[in-house]
Image (cartoon, rainbow, N blue to C red; front, side, top):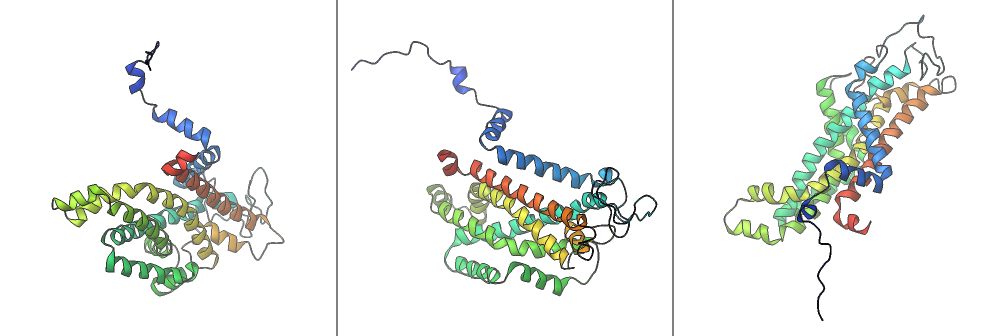
Length: 309
C-alpha cells in the first residue's frame, strides 16, 4: 500500500513551540473552574493575613464606647458589628486571620517535613525500619487527633497568651496529628520508586542511601507531598480553631483568633448572633477554599486523573 505525502506539513517551529505558563494556567482554570476560584480565594486570604495591620481600621483591642457602640449589629460603619466590649468585629476578623492562617501554614510545614521524612525513610529501607515507622504512625493515629493535641499542649505549654514559643508549640501539636497521613501517602510513593531501575543503578555505583533518597526518591514524591499539604492546611486551620475555642489557643486581646472569637460569642448568642456567625463563617470559608484548592491540585498533578479527565 503506497503512502501519501502530507500536502501541508506542520512547520518545525510550531512543533517545538510549547504553551507558556499563562496559557497553561488559563487551560487549567477552564478545566477546573471551582479549583481556580478556590485558589484565588486562598491567595486573597493569605494577602489579608499578611497586610492585616494595613487593612484593619482600628486596633484589635480598641475600646471606644463613643465610636463603637456595644453590641451594634452589622452596619455601614461596622460591617461585622461590634462585640460586648465595644470592639469592632471586622477589625478582629482581619487581624485574627494572622494567627488562624499562620498556625495553619506552620503546622502543615512541620507535619509535612516530619511525615515526608518518615515516609521516605520507611519506603526506601523497608524491613524493620518500615515496621517501626508504621507502628509508630499507627500509635499516633490510635489517639483522637484533638485529644492528642490537647495532651501535647497540656504537658509543654507553660506560658499563657501570645508568644513565639506558644505559637511554635501549638503549630507543633497540630503538625504531629497531621504527620501520619502524610507519612502513609509518601511511603506508598517511595515504595513504588524504590524498585525502579535507576534507583538500583544508583545503588550499584556506590551512592549512599541518603544521596539516593535526596536525589532520586524525594523529587519523585514532591507532587503527592504538595497535594496532601494543600489539603491539610484546611484541617490545620480547623484544629487551631477548635483548640482556641476550648481555651488552649495562643490568642489574647491584642492577637485574636477566629476560634477564640467564636467562643467569646457564646454567652451573647441570642443578643448578638454576628459574634458567633461571622467567625464561624470565616473558618468554614477558609477550610472549604483550601480543601477545594487541594482537590483541584490533586487532579492536575496526578497523571492518572489528568489522563482520565
